[in-house]
Image (cartoon, rainbow, N blue to C red; front, side):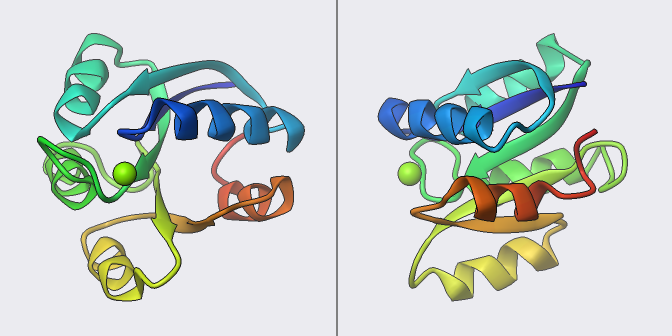
Length: 124
Ligand SMILES: [Mg+2]
C-alpha cells in the first residue's frame, strides 16, 4: 500500500480523481492533495513516504511539466513514479511530459478502467 499525491488546481477534479481511484480499487494507503506544482514539491519534502504522484499539467504558479522536471532532479522514475493527467488535445504537452521523465499519463475524462491501466505496475 502506497501513499499517493494528487496535484491539480481544481479541487473538484481532485475529488473526482479520488473517487475514481476508489472505484478502480487502487491499493493506496493515503491520498494527499496539492493545488499546483509548488505546493506539490512542498508536500513531497514534508512527506518523504509519498510513493507515487498523479499530476495535472495546466496549473498556476508551477505547471505539471516544471513540477515533474523538479522532481526528476532528485528522484528517478523507479523511486517516485509520476503519472500525468491531461486533457484531450494536449498531445504535444504529453510528449514533453514523457521526455521529462513521466512514467505514464491518463486522459481526462477518465474511467476506473483507464486509471487502472495507467497505474498498472506502479502501485501495489
Ligand atoms: Mg488544471
